[in-house]
Image (tube, rainbow, N blue to C red; front, side, top):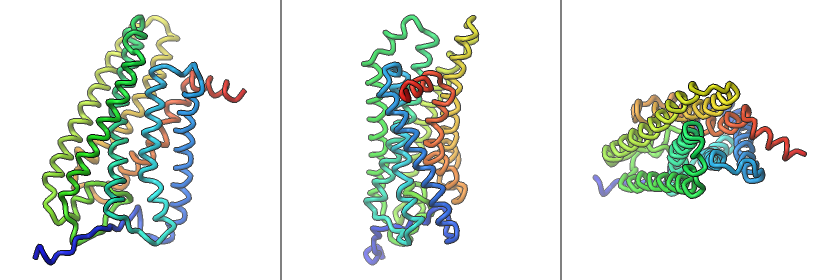
Length: 305
């Protein structure tokens, strides 16, 4: 029977919905979101590169965070937009694995960049006199390179394990992009090893990075409360609150779908969570970090003159 099985090399992405009357409206909505996402993130990167006042560790990390957000959105949204306007829902095995690789690597890198940003705020607020020495350019570059390296290796591990699976019965992926959990459900090979590795790494990466961020911000909060200057306290609260909002949104959805729910996540619910961390968070991040940031707003005013 194993010899008579036909191995599948193409999949059908079901997308968000099969209802034909919603395809064009959804295309317009997500196209608009994608344009705003790219303009916001790439615009923030351009502003940071252009303005010398923003050539500091915090904005170096923020620029790279914007880059990973742009990569995350670009790994998923274009294929989803094509599905809305074309009847061809097929995606090859290579395209599918490549899509997941780019998504996973950018999302993992973002976890570690958020840790670097939290450590930067800790060093700036808790140890301001030694900040320039502690957060040297060399250390910042190391943080960024390690973040990307971990992201690339983590994604490579999961994609390598995907090649041990065979797909011979159903080729329908009930999702809008090639997510590994739906792939496990249609595999003819037992995906237990893949699922276990995915769970272990999801727990380790998400819990370890999240706890590092929380510990940093608890110490920052203690230092802020001891600050006598109201102006300094307000500035620190403003910066850190933006970081914490972004962290809460990002980790909340990732933790629910990969750690709490796992492969038992309801199909529709799983799509909603995935929409949030692949499309909505990359849209919101540049605005979360910019709208209340006087340095970014000042850089925008200088650029417009």
